[in-house]
Length: 417
Image 1 (cartoon, rainbow, N blue to C red):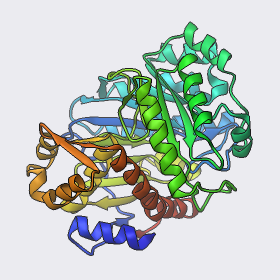
Image 2 (cartoon, rainbow, N blue to C red):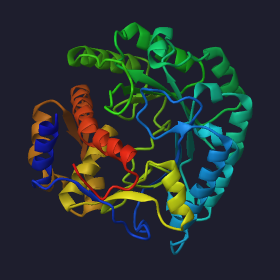
Image 3 (cartoon, rainbow, N blue to C red):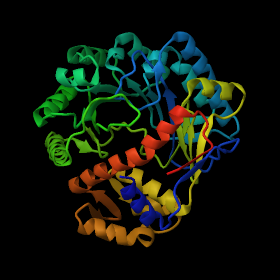
Image 4 (spheres, helix red, strand yellow):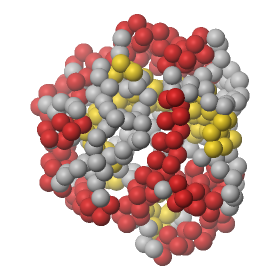
């Protein structure tokens, strides 16, 4: 696994140098010149901690949550207050955890961000199905939220039992969402669970669209080494057959595929906190991607609060990209969105895409991974599967190792990937 990702990294970066993260960081974040800048806020609290979930989370208590939100708002002022003028940004997404547990304070966070950033494409919040109730939805809408992502995982009882969750009530979801409408309602499902069938996934998709969703996400199950999950991974060939069949089914329904794992009822219906050229992350475990740097905040909620309360940024690790490393990172996430435009790449880096990766793009076309038309490379279903297949290697070789270390050490000195 590591050998595959190491060889790909060395080939694409034209260097044997690994990605080296260190504990040093800038006292201010140089984001002013970033275009297409997004914002992300992490709320780590959950009522119950799911054993399959790899994200940074802690059990909820009001006292802990209030202290954390106070520190979060202070971090926003630390970062935004050092900018020279208000910055235009694309979007704001709240992830977790369960952000709705802090629903009553989300407007404070949004207002704090609004002092420094002009949000142009809406605000999204992740929800547990139990939070899709009228009081919470009204609070979110009044705070300025325009997009929802509901973590269904599966409407099938047997899969919910494996994941340790209770099945959502589709009729209750539909009634609440009809009473308090939002621009985008995405429902998330875990794909490639043991024994999962095409008919089950079709039923989940149909149920979602019939009960308030206009967007769905089918995220593959990945078994992180630091979780307590006992779920087994689906074999590769079976996973590919299922992925291709689900993609075909969504396209038969007239859905637009706007990323590797998401399908929408219309071009303008989107929910994604990942497909951004650059973004600022606030909160414990939140990542920040700038033109020449990648940063991740500490995973320790307690150390996060202490660091911010001491008037310092809670950065745990910083990667300073070489040019080729930044290009690889850019292309990886652009490919997640299905398309890579030559004009966008050249605008960002100042050099033609084919000059830097002409051989690789030629090979991708010959192998049937991408098509090319009018300056845009678009991923085929075959290419999407192999992207997903490589992404699982990347996740376990890079993200699993980083997140695992950050769970053990709030502020490590160095990490090489």
